[in-house]
Amino acid sequence: MQSKILSRRDLDFMLYEWLDVEALTGRPRFSEHSRETFDAALDTCEQVATDLFAPHNKKSDQNEPHFDGEKVRLIPEVGVALQAFCKAGLMAAGQDFEMGGMQLPCVVEKAGFAYFKGANVGTSSYPFLTIGNANTLLKCGTAEQIETFVKPMLEGRFFGTMCLSEPQAGSSLSDIVTRAEPQADGSYRLTGNKMWISAGDHELSENIIHLVLAKVPGPDGKLIPGVKGISLFIVPKRMVNRDGSLGERNDVVLAGLNHKMGYRGTTNCLLNFGEGKFRPGGRPGAIGYLVGEVHKGLANMFHMMNEARIGVGLGAVMLGYTGYLHALDYARNRLQGRHPLAKDPAKPQLPIIEHTDVKRMLLAQKAYVEGGLGLALYCSRLVDEERTAEMPEARRHAGLLLDILTPIAKSWPSQWCLEANSMAIQVHGGYGYTREYNVEQFYRDNRLNPIHEGTHGIQGLDLLGRKVRLQDGAAFRALGVEAGNTIARALAVPELSSHAQALAAALTRMEQVTQVLHAAGDMNKTLANASLYLEAFGHAVVAWIWLEQALRAVGKSGHDADFYRGKLQAAAYFFKWELPKVHQQLDLLETIDTTTLDMRDAWF
Image (cartoon, rainbow, N blue to C red; front, side):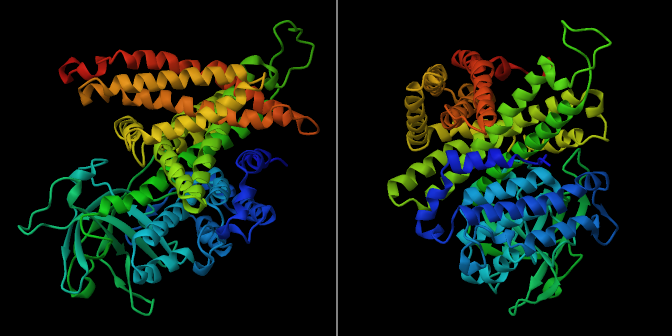
């Protein structure tokens, strides 16, 4: 039976026919791998996700975590699934052999993890955060910290979190007030509150390793204003002894669980640090260990934040993708109505996939989710290039592309794959609006993704305010080079030349309008409509991703001809229905419109 989580045929196309993942096996880091080992890893992911993650997705949604006064309780299936995930070695899939890992390329690791995001986004959050936590400490931590905290995470014995936001600060990290007081033994004592902490408390692992942003007071005892005063700390839920055994409970306490619209299988917590309920070492204060240098915490945490942004985008893609496959299956099997010119009620009803408006909605979903998956996997492939390309210039080029694409990889799927979920509900009609069908949950789960790891608006500010100007426009130019190469190849293909011309025109306008915006002389005006800029930029990028896919699909025949024809039709849809939206958006942006900027509180 065809999977309703993810099309393996589509995944194989992207990995092997487009991104040429097999070529990575020629590099020293991946030399022990082959397509066979990659496929085996993907097979394992698909099986575990299908057998143990997907079956409790709805149950986990209907029986969300609760606090019984002492512990957070989850349905037992969550723990069973996570044990299988860890036992299969997937927590360390991308890590060095010496760390107990499989040393898989990032693009293969993320392709495998896509199955878990699509099968059960709530349960998959626990390893998602743990892997990001471990990767951050591998980059920034000491050898002792890696031995004490990272290795148990990669073994699946400890899980991890990221603790950034606070009740009064939200995304404004410069306003955090969690305090870290240095101690004589080199540790710190933390006091404060952290809000919206996914996976912040549970009994799924032996320990929880929190990565916490806090401020070390200056010589005057006051916290340093702004982001310059922020440092990063490891704060374990339970202390870890020198021999690796667990010690006493640290002064980290669950203050409450947040009750969410979706994503209910992941605990989401308000945590109190240093309230005194537990007294490690005989006194209050959560014991923490500095990661990297004092006051360099935000730069270190950005390793995890950027990884999480791409991961959030992948999660948004997969919720849209599984919703699309559910809608496609429903449309093929639901009989209703007849063609406008064949209304004879004595004739059999048609599967609704035969109705043009249903085909429109399914084609839009296909364009969104397969374009979004292509973007996520392309970014993951860039990670491999940045780490393992032979030439330094190639690594630098990949890094620049990754910088400018990260806000797009997070935000575009969060907007448009959510729209795909809305269309999946519409295809189901009234049934889609009921809890008896899965698509309503996919929509609720996906609605978080435009919010967390930086809201849609913050991604726009990042892209227009920073990324397009990075290194005097080097990242913007790097993207132009890659898209230009694609356009040049497509111009030589008659079936794709009109798409290539349309993309070239959109990118030329994008560059012109970007220059106009940054010549405004007032950053408030430049950034006033940054979200619209983000959407226009994202659509142009995904059009490029679709042109890349179309180049691999054009001219193909044989037993798989329908698959390739579907790719070309989805690309045509994107270029005819979606890309034209960019020009209207750019026309408005070029006017430096201040309608929203000029609005006043009293006028509402």
